[in-house]
Image (tube, rainbow, N blue to C red; front, side):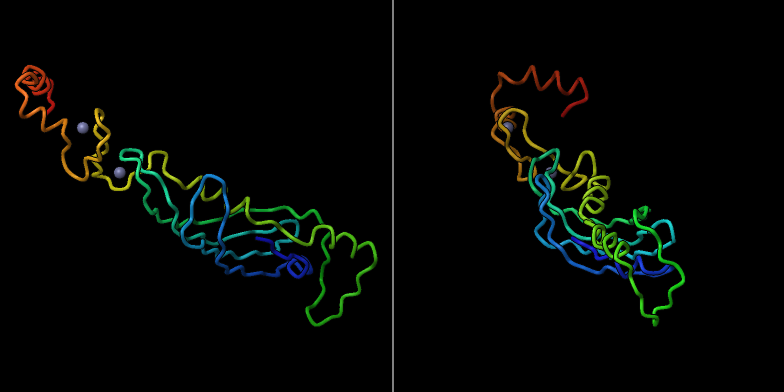
Length: 178
Ligand SMILES: [Zn+2]
Ligand SMILES: [Zn+2]
């Protein structure tokens, strides 16, 4: 997402509201729906304050059952960017701005801000280290890989029927297992 800064840069105190849905293409993150970006950029003179929210739904993989699940993003953003450009001060909006050639060159060089790194970094920082589809997710059977959220697997049935497992069951019970 590219932001055009020329207008924001023209005067200290100027604000620029970014309200956009955009579909990020980050290699390892999946988005089914666009991310809603709502950011207010304020020209503070030597720097730009970027403040607002990033909201959306991201596909994560549950660390227990390894299934994809939708994760709600709701991120508060507050960042400061430094201007690389010389500040044009005290120009009222109604005044016509006469840009000298060198001013023009400078603005043209840096008139846009590529916002994706800011958005991507904020998304990554907000993600859980161990994502869970549900806090009660039962995960996978360590023997056969069956998703235990869908019910017990053959391994646990074997535990019930096969008498050879009895000593193990007893041991597990003693150790506080089921
Ligand atoms: Zn899960
Ligand atoms: Zn199993």
